[in-house]
Image (cartoon, rainbow, N blue to C red; front, top):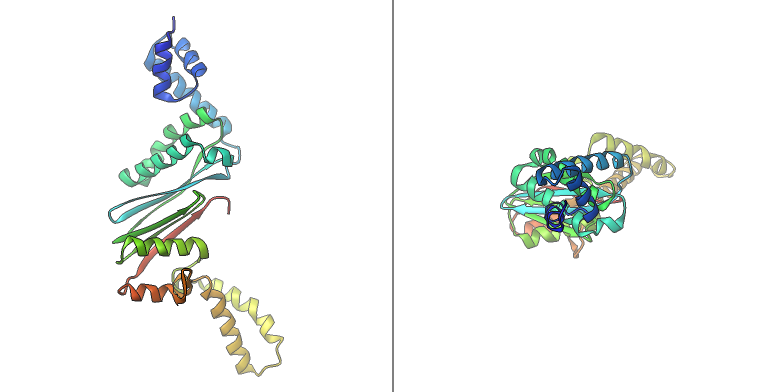
Amino acid sequence: MITTEQIKELRDQTGVSVMQCKKALEEAGGDMEKALMVLKKKSSDIAAKKSDREAAEGVVVIKKSAGKGIILTLNCETDFVAKNSDFVDLANVLADKALADGIDAMKTASVDMINPVVQKIGENIRLGDVAELSGAVMGSYVHDGKSGVLVSLSGGDETLGKDIAMHIAAMKPEYLKKEDIPEEKRKLATEMFETEVNASDKPAEIKAKMLQGKIDTFFKEQTLLEQPFVKNPDTTINGLLQKAGNVTISNFIRYTIGK
């Protein structure tokens, strides 16, 4: 006979419903280890059935340690589940494991970590984007769990790093510096503005300056170092870094759920 204590013990270990625990114990003849295996198989089967369902909601989480940071997205089907404590805890545990053991090790372990939560919550859950950055100073910012930025700096402090991460979240730059803009993007921008400039009756040399000016302005709005700092538009991000003592930004990553 399956006891209430057995069901409680299995529920405490797995978090799944009382009914699922009771059925697993009955199937396992009361053997706790076998019941755990039964539930593991069921969670895998449930996850497989739900895996083709769209998972466009979710959360962004960031974890940092000395000189290293992880930014990770975990996806689910609804915004309701995205706010569920079990789902959010799972995202944080996955990010912690990636920080401690590396992204590859986390990905290997992620299926067995995700499937039980799928079984408990009842929605498709899948690991989204995940990346690691390293640097002397790691800045980060997460807005409402839906948009997150991780940035690595050569110096400065975490306050500066957070300010820059908040700026990136708000202004959404595509590139760090103008040298990062791909040549094909420059070519497309040139073609886009040539028609507009050629419609002018200005002399050829003026048209050339107009074209270059439009291209420069277009990419300036997308280049982090050239953007006016969102908290003080009188200075650019590059100016902010120089004022902080010639700090440089090594790289940044921005992840957004649903956009």
